[in-house]
Length: 318
Image: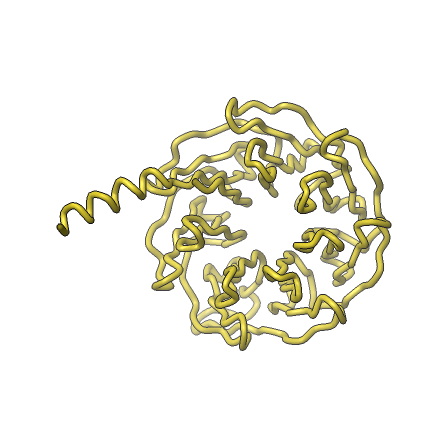
């Protein structure tokens, strides 16, 4: 009986392998990882300095911020070919799709603007002036608001997606990098790289309700630089990539208390769940690898070598 159960488990795991795409900033490539074998199964050449990547809602296309080409490339998943480029504005770094997939909000770091593009007509709908060095980008689960972070101005800019106008600015700590909405959209988590904090903001009042700080034994405070954030759908955990501190913080998403620090590769940037949030993958820029974290045990299981300076992650679930 045990042998049959084990065999079924193995067969099932291979039937439900997730496919993970990793953007390699300095190689101008994507590494493709099979989540069951945890091996790179393909390397795809793309535009210059790929950073943010995300998938269309039907997983048929991959959007790629080719920052040094000043464009967003759209790749067909089946053929692995670039279908066309979207007019992204200068130096696109991060972006976010609306829930219906019809609009994409792009952060243009060098121009201090957010470019809104119609993904179907491939046209610019509007360019919105924001603060200095826009970086992070997110759209609320209900699609009513987009938020952009500006690294030098230290603001979260709240944008009404109907009017395409800024409706509020929330001041956070120095150099905000990434924004993550809770599943219900009632809270926004924003990392501040130089400030060394994560601010939790109420979506209705647009004011902070908690500020999370970090302290790792043996690590200088200046090296603790929060960047990527991922929240579990059940509201239990928040995971925060701490940059050159080479750790991921595990936070109780209800009490905002840090539970644990997990040692990963060097200069951890972004995070993404696989296998129904049972595993968490991290991109580690300086060490050129991806770490695999088991979410149940909160332990780092494996390191996967990819290209130079891996940055973004996107996952096709099976």
